[in-house]
Length: 345
Image (cartoon, rainbow, N blue to C red; front, side, top):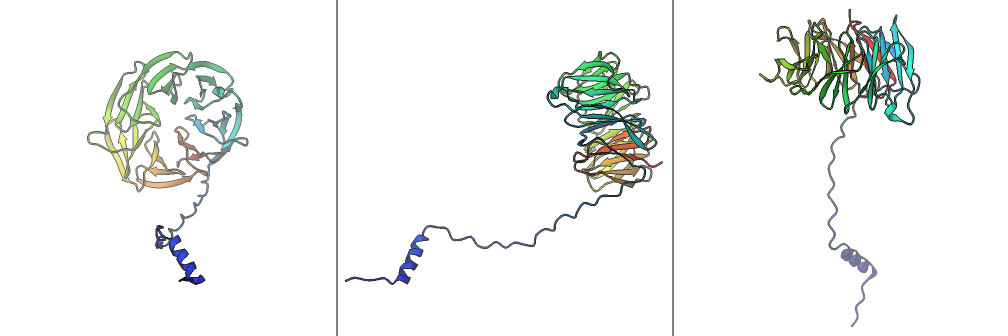
């Protein structure tokens, strides 16, 4: 006896057996409303009196330096092209340059540091630090062999010595001969973006997470005149004025001002977001804070934000203060411009 299966039933059985052992289809996932897109970033108007400096195209600065009197501005890019400008009467005039390297990148300048009086430039290369004169930066004064990677360079207030941090050790050189006069490894401070100096110029002052470190330039001996650890302050960054009188320290929820002469906190105010690379003027009147794209100017006495400066591009670099000129210089890694902002009078 034979049995025939209808074509429609045969198709159904085939589909049934074909599906054996397979997991059931996933249940539909309920998706809530999409998060709204972030609001578009609005460029703030450029404040009156802002000087916009732009090198020949294509030039995207990676490091800048300015003399404390605001007369000279120097910048370089990652490929070693560099330019020196003289600033006068609200204008920047290019007066010298260094060509971009195309083959031997050990000869490409990585960063330059102007002396406070603007008379010299310390140029950091792959294997050496070369000190040259300004405004003619082709005139070499001396050269210094590097001992490892240099992460920080700074002249003393009288421009007679150069301080270099190499592999965690401070090295101090005579800026006329290049001779090393001190070499030591500090222990207690954890970070720094700026050096201050005492009134006599004999000690460098470094503000860090643990407190204020004083370093004798002649001997390299260190001491800590001000501690932030007892009680713990929880600072994430700190800066010191050029003359060493004031420290601005930023925590996650507040900004504090310390008077280093009396070792007391002289001002504090709350903030709603974390800032980095704080700067403070030597008269203690203004504090400059930064986030990724903007600078914020605070009046210390009023404890109020009085200005916001916008830097076009992405990832605002480390701002610098030309203290005697009352100017702040900043650049963005994705933009070809350098902006020189004037502090309120």
